[in-house]
Length: 396
Ligand SMILES: Cc1ncc(COP(=O)(O)O)c(C=O)c1O
Image 1 (cartoon, rainbow, N blue to C red):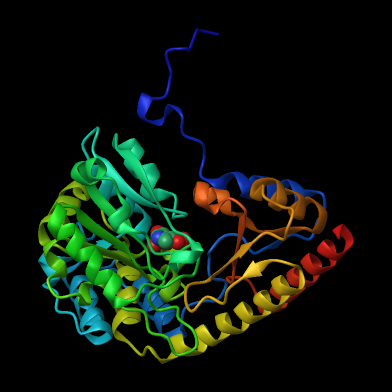
Image 2 (spheres, rainbow, N blue to C red):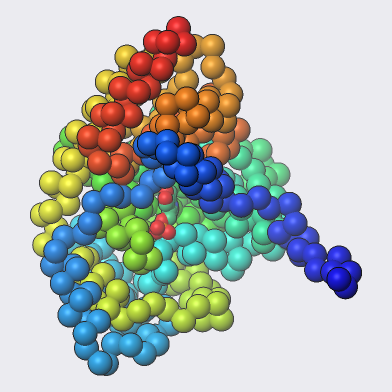
């Protein structure tokens, strides 16, 4: 065979490992092949379907002969108008559809692409730790230096913006925020969001607020949009998604809204990278965003019930845990004597068949924690918690 050593990855991806869940899925497939009954409470993928009227729109649209061509870059004008309508109805925020909104193939690509359009090598990205891994991964690929912002229980999992050293503030291009938060389930008060906008304006840093859980709230809480902060559009872009809000994770539909310049950079970049998405998906997304929102409350009650089952089980198993007011995660400190989250979750999976996510996946400050997702059938969550409680009793 010819020497193929010249086929090497580019430097920018050479040290990259596969995304955690890509590796975990393989491990779980191996266990299932050995007939282990694995319960997945790791990945944040809703198990419930969207409302029927959304699926009906998809089916009807797919049956038409005029919906199978390419769709406009950045989404159809109707889809961008629907995003603006949703922001007006939900947050009383006014957006210019063609300038201040953009349709994404799920929000993950938008987050990744934001780093590509704003970061030059050597720039700094301010990234929450723990945090959704794409913020730092996309920055590293763009050549950024990552400055981690610890999210600590004692600060209600909000970053201390005043503690960032001036030399990092000076070089920073993006401040990443995410509330309701993955993985901690924490929320941000309006005053904090206003402070972040002010920080961005003062230091000439784009504030990127990632808000895919804004419509998954419990106990009557309603999460705000950062776009409600007066003047937010001057420096802010918000990512949102139909994945969790409308149980449409596999459909790959999300949106960016906010600063028109940032939207235009993303739009230009995306026009070279993708060719938008399937019209029936867009049309069903419009129905989701502008149709009856009543079913979301019932769906959130199902998550809330699951959350309470998880909290009760974790307390019984010796974890330290607070009750999250939003998002689909419970973030728990490992029982005393356990500090290595990777080893803990790996043992738990091998010995009980329950798959959870080690806190370390979300950054160094996540070490010592585990994340549990509520996107699994209630009965299976109950069973997972029973297995965890019994397992920790045996270990004690
Ligand atoms: C904080 C956060 N942002 C973004 C995403 C990506 O969502 P999607 O690409 O499905 O819109 C996720 C998915 O889990 C997430 O947790």
